Amino acid sequence: QVQLVESGGGLVQAGDSLRLSCAASGRTFSSDVMGWFRQTPGKEREFVAAITWSGGNIYYADPVKGRFTISRDNAKNTVYLQMNSLKPDDTAVYYCAVRLGRIGSVYSSLWYDYWGQGTQVTVSS
Image (tube, rainbow, N blue to C red; front, top):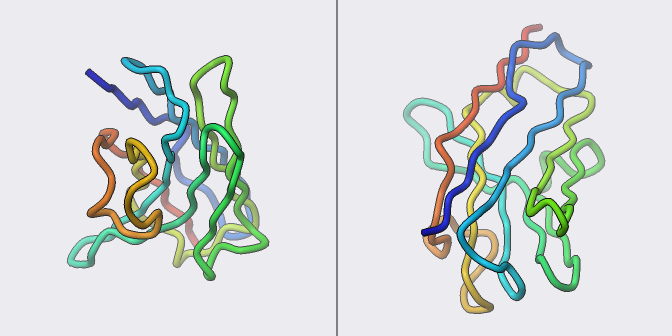
């Protein structure tokens, strides 16, 4: 059973930084993809960033390019999302997720198989 546990959310001011962590367990991750999504009330879950475990291919949504950095530590089975220059529009619940295998879009939440419980990020102006 795959389990994902996020941590690192909180309340910060605009311009500040936060680092989210997602600890994964229950499987040897090789060709899988780890993604970060975010969601605000009344809106669909939105793609933020993704990274492949094996090749380190990285993908970002346009609103976070240049400000957010996704990385992984294979030894710790942990994926990170470093968020810099935070804006009030970044306020959301952030979820990590894993897409098992190579099939499907990294950008769509529909292709991800397991999800964490989410961590709240609030950016005040």
